[in-house]
Structure formats: C-alpha cells, structure tokens
Image 1 (cartoon, rainbow, N blue to C red):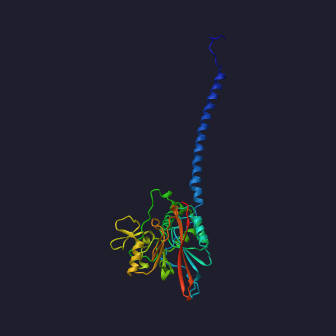
Image 2: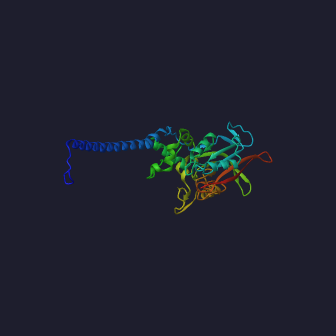
Image 3: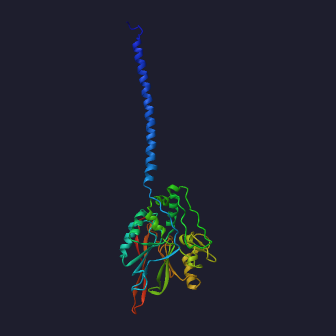
Length: 359
C-alpha cells in the first residue's frame, strides 16, 4: 500500500468504533445522573439546616396568661419589723432600661453593693432587646428572683411569641371597659425583626417570667425629696412609661402606660408617644403640675423609664431613669433607703447611681 492508497477499515475495527461510541454515550448518561443526584443532595442539605434542624431546637411553647394591670412588691421597705407577712428590706433598687446589656447590669449592681438578702430590685421594663445579651439578662433575673414591670419591648416580644407559636395574643387584666387591645404591629421584614427572632429562642421559663411582669407596681412609701433632704412621704409606683393624672390607676389604659411620653394640650387628658406633635408637653411636667395643684386623682410618686430622649429626669413627683444605655449612655438605678431618725421615726431617702454603657 502506497501513500495514495485509501485506508481500509476492516469490519472488526468498525465494530470496535461502534463499541467506543456506545461507551461515550454511557459516560455522558452517568454524568447527567450525577448532576441530578447532586442537586437532590443540595436540596436535602438545605432543608436539613434551614428547616429540620432549626425546628428541632425551637423551645416548646408555653401558654400565656393575662398580664396583671396592678401588683405590689413582695416586700416592705422598713428599718424595723412590722406586722406584715412580707419580708423586710432596707433598700429598694429601681433600675432603668437595661436593653439586654448584661455586663452593665452587673457593674451597676456591684456599684450599689447589691445584697440579695437586704435589697429588693425592680426592673422598670425594657430589660431585653436592642443589646447583645437578652437571654443572659433574663436568666440572671430569674435566678435571683428579681421583680419587674412590663415594658413596651417585653410586650412586643410576647406578641411575637404568640404569633410564632400560634397562641392567643396576650391580654391585660383589670382593663377599663372601653379599652380594646391594639392588633400586633408586624413589620414587612417580619422574620428578620429582632423581637421576633428573640421570641423564637425563648424558653418557657423566660416567657413565664416576662408574662408575670405587671404594668404598674405599688412600691409602698417613698420619699418626697426637697432640695437637700426628704420633706415627706408618699405612696410610690413603678411603671414603664407613665400614667394619666386625671383617672385612677385601675382605669389606666395599659398601652398608654407602656408607650406614652407626652400629654396633648389644651386639656392634657390625651397621651401620645410622639413628643414632636403640636401641643405635646412632657407628661411628667403636667403630672407634677397637677399634683402640686391638687387636681391629680391619685396622689402617688411615679418611677419610670422609657423616655431616653429626656434622659435622667428627677422631679418632685416623677423620677425618669432611662439614661440611654442602649445608645452608649448610662445605666441608672434609684436606690431608696429607710433608716431610723433621731426620734425613732422612719426616714426615707433616695439617690441615683449610674454606670457607663457600651453602645
């Protein structure tokens, strides 16, 4: 065979080429099948980590009970024994909005020399959310049997908890007949809302603790402070945002107590959470004026938080203790003490103590 002779392919070689083509087609078929199996595996892994495993670790749900409108501390602030069955404490410590800043809470309690046997602590609401350690704060409050009142953020977490677990929305006890609870305010990015994400993580013990925080808490006798010394005694209450001066405590609207910042003029019997509205005046300014004029329905001194814009605000009948801890300000406590005077009379005094917060 010379260079011009066509290459002749024998029949057995043709068969061999046909076998090779068949093998190539089979190889392509295996590759497609592998891709299919890989896709199925990816979907399964995605489901495992985004649906199945998270649901395995979602805490069991606990039913919500009605939120108490008014309660009282389980202690008596007195330097001497009384006939009361409640335990006697020498100091009452009221702490402003912690907003999940566990480290700062510990620093504050250390600074006031907190003694669990001698002191009674009340959180003024908004002790969770915004900061880094909501669950650590809750665990500490539960373990140390620290008392609390409901803040707007705790209430929102309960609402989100009810939505997530398919429970009835939280209700208030002892509400006025005309009061109708508002529907939950859910943002467009519902699943990414921090309070919703926190609610998903909470154990039954956390929810039960929050759920027992009342809207208003009676504190017993507290001092009316003059410029340099106490000038009298008045019943005190703790509430997160404020109270209306023109109605009794039992007739208060719970959501106003959680949200209000100002009264609307000219009659100042309507509240708002927006102090920039026309004719809006700080609720504490009007409340103090009405107390001094003798027009307030209830003669009580009010210790509250919530109003970070106005910061520490100490007036004769109102004491605002939200000092912007969640924004790099301070965390503040009001320490109310009782001692025996020169003539064996009980003397009540109070002072504020603060620590710096990390933003």
